[in-house]
Every structure is written in structure tokens, then in C-alpha cells.
Amino acid sequence: MIELKSAEEIARMAVTGQFVGELLAELGGIAAVGLNLMDLEHHARRRIKERGAESCYWDYAPAFGRGPFRNVLCLSVNDAVLHGLPHDYVLRDGDLLSIDMAAAIDGWAADSALSVIVGTPDPADQKLIEATEVALAAGIAATQPGARLGDVSAAIGAVAHSYGYAVNHEFGGHGIGRTMHEAPHVSNDGRAGRGMRLEPGLTIAIEPWLCATTDKITYDKDGWTIRSADGSRTAHSEHTVAVTESGPQVLTRRPVPGGTSADSAQRGTQL
Image 1 (cartoon, helix red, strand yellow):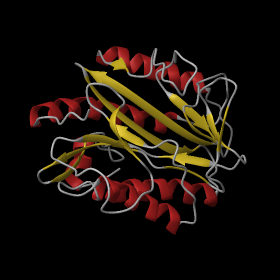
Image 2 (cartoon, one colour):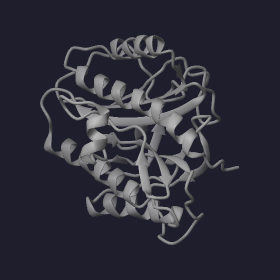
Image 3 (tube, one colour):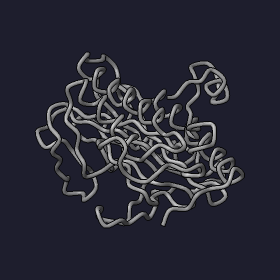
Image 4 (cartoon, one colour):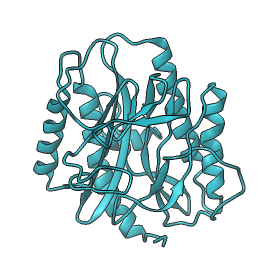
């Protein structure tokens, strides 16, 4: 069942979204060569505790994972793209790291992800990350009242294909609100004009993720980490978005460098 949120409820989700966006930007900023993934995990745990928030990941046990998940971040490196299990790994020069987190404050959740290159960037990795970010922006722009869910999926897929990447249909975005995963499923490719009509009050997480040279995936023995089937690099970008009468509202905006998430909102920054 899809639950439409009131303006007050969206405002409460935006409080959580601001926290998630700011913490995600902070984590992306401290990821560096020589840093252990578990240092990022424990940093996030401290921040969540200090804020009085709750991780949506801790003890999460969906059908697709080997639960319960006992971390607050998904940290996926290089050919890993989704649900990366934090572990004892020291980041190396040129690593492509995707950080995904979801938290709840006062019962309202927000979910977001970003990908960063640690140390010396490879142009091919930069292109891959850019594709997910541009696809995310296109998906957000398509999240208009009266539009169809397929319009969002088609916008994401069009960008991915224009960059030369194939799209996996097994995992995509999702509804979000009182819990992290709600209806509807938001595919990263689709046909415009199809699917449910987007109504004000709908809140969804839009999350393009791409593998450089395949649309096939494999699972690690840990039961969580998803990788590209051919070992190629991967990237992932995500925001929580609300449909409003005036258009899409990004609830997990990240601060601009040297600014705050409020500055991002004032400047109209999508990501």
C-alpha cells in the first residue's frame, strides 16, 4: 500500500533528510587513502547516536540479504555496488567507494547514497559516477505531480544509455516514509507514460546505480555485497524525494563545499 504524506509529515522527513545528507557529505569528505572502512562505519555510528537518530540498516533482514545486517552503512568498493558489508579493508589510491545510508528521526526515514574516488581519479570512474549523478538529477526532474512513475524510470534509463551503460532491473529505488522500504518500486529504466500517477505526498528514494561494462550482478559469500558480474567498476547515487504541488522536493540535499544543506536548497542544487 502506498501512503501519501501530508506537508507536515514531509517536513518531518526533511529533518531526517538534512541529517542524512550532512552526514553523508561528511563521510565522503573523510574517505581517504589509508582509512579503514570500519573507521567510516564507527564514525557514522557515533554521529547517529549523538543526533538521537536510529539506523534503518541495523538489524535489517530482508529476503534478499543474509540478515540481520549489523552495521549502519553500506560501503561498496570498486566492483561492489550495493549492500557492501563494512569490513576490515584499508582504502587504496584510486578506489571507487560508494556510501549508502538510511536513518530515522522521530519515526521518519530518509535514504541517500554517493560515490567518491579516493586518491587519484581514473577518468573512466569519473564518467561512471557522473552518469549516476546526471541520471539521478534527471529522475528527480521527472518527479512531477501528475506525471507517471515510468517517466522517472525512463529519464534515469535514458541518461544511463546515453553514457553507454546497460541498466540492471533487479534493484532500484523505492517508496520511503515511516519505514525505509515502502511501495512503489522505482526501476532505473522504463517507459514514459506508464505506471502509477505521481501525486503530491508521494515520497520515494531514487537511486541510479551502474556497472561499467555489464548489467549482470553476483553476490558475495557474506550474503549482502552485490558486485558487477564481470568485475568492472560500479557507482551509485541516491536521494529521497517528495512530490509536492510545486514539483519535486529533495529531502536529502547535501551541503555545498564550505556551506550547509540550506545553502544547497537556496542555490537549487540537486545533489
